[in-house]
Image (cartoon, rainbow, N blue to C red; front, side, top):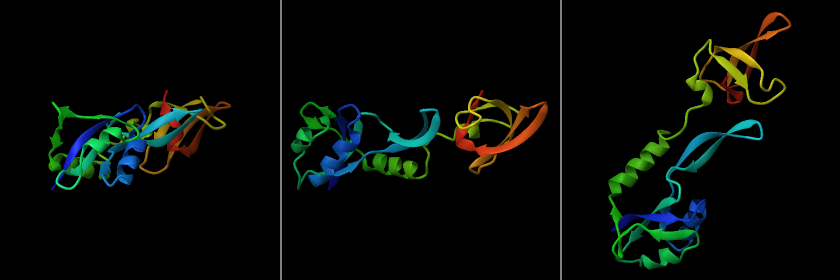
Length: 166
């Protein structure tokens, strides 16, 4: 019967360790979540490990040895009690997988936290760092922003990922 075990990885080596474990015939599960990051004046949605420096490995102890996991590239150690790895209940892994699939761990889009009328700033583009007011926040990819320009109020529809709180 396959049981799940927690594996401690080297920093930023979770995906590499999971790949090498799969190549050796183990089942590896690296829970991830989506979050918004700002880099080079633009925002993008990236997938990051839910538990940095940890992943889970499925091992059928009757057919497979667990010690080769320790010498896998990217692996630092396994979570153990004494000399034996500690098994994690299958229900925990099933719950994590279901919640990850449903997006329960994902960070909401920055604009979804804002309400109409709030001051916002554009993060990039020709109007980078211009301050305006959020006119309408929908669930779509674009939002309406009101800007003061040449003494008039102008409404512009911009990609939601460019908008952040001012």
